[in-house]
Amino acid sequence: MTTPTQSTHYNIIVMSDPQPWRLNLDNNDPNDDQTRWEATVRKVRDSIQLLHHEKSFAFGIINGDLTEFGRRHQRESFRSLFAPSPLGFNTYVGLGNHDYQNNVGDCSEPSNSDYSMNACARGMVFDMHYRIEEYRHYSTSENFRYDSSEYSGSKAYSWDYGEIHFVQLQNYPTYHVVLDHWAASTINVTDSIDWLEKDLIQARNRNKTIILNFHDGNQHFPENSSQEELSFFKYMIEHYGVKAVFVGHTHYVGQDNRYGGSEIFGDIPVYNSGALFKGDYLSVEVNGSQLSIAVYNGLSGQPQLIEQWN
Image (cartoon, rainbow, N blue to C red; front, side, top):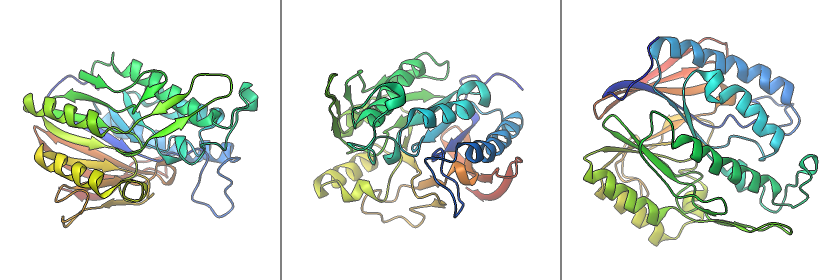
């Protein structure tokens, strides 16, 4: 297996929703099922490693719900299986609603001596900030840009690889939240709309084909955004020629805008990578600006080809 280089013909893997410790079982307690989750999802990770030996992935993308509720031990379970060292390639991740939305004002970390009810959400934001600092130095991160400081920003970021400009918008483009703490500085998570417009302009000026990534494209994004925000988002992605959007959240693999005409995405293809805890992931072959997408399931420990999207 050769080390990936900046080229125009390569493979990547797109994933979402590992969500430790959730399982697709009736008797699953997603906040107290660590052993079974790690045993199940380790097989999925092993199947990805096997496919990597065949495809030589340049990098991977994981679009949100890295945890069930943002707890430190859940983050550690995720890292043990999906950090670059166990996978064998770099990974770029984004946060989802289970990481820093559902737990706002509802999750402390006594084991970490943090009794703030925003401790879990804040922990995920800090974790994302430090990951971005790491991503800046990846060999696969040409023209890396980001909207993040330790206590503010949307945490959106982007990079070029070959002829493609990849963008990570985290939970969804208009998500924002204030995470205060009784004994520490307030974290102000902002939306990424203004940052995104500047980023798309720069990418088009470099003649790059653009791919967007975020977690939730069909629930909280439309529910919690104004019509003006949604219309402007649609205008931007159409005007600047976004090639495709990759999302997660639903736990179901699919082509979410197969026939076009979406009020949010227009005619731009939207691909859902399902859920890692169910074994789902997408292998994406990039050839210049063209994409060929294969759906795989790895619950058995082997990469099983399910469907091919062209």
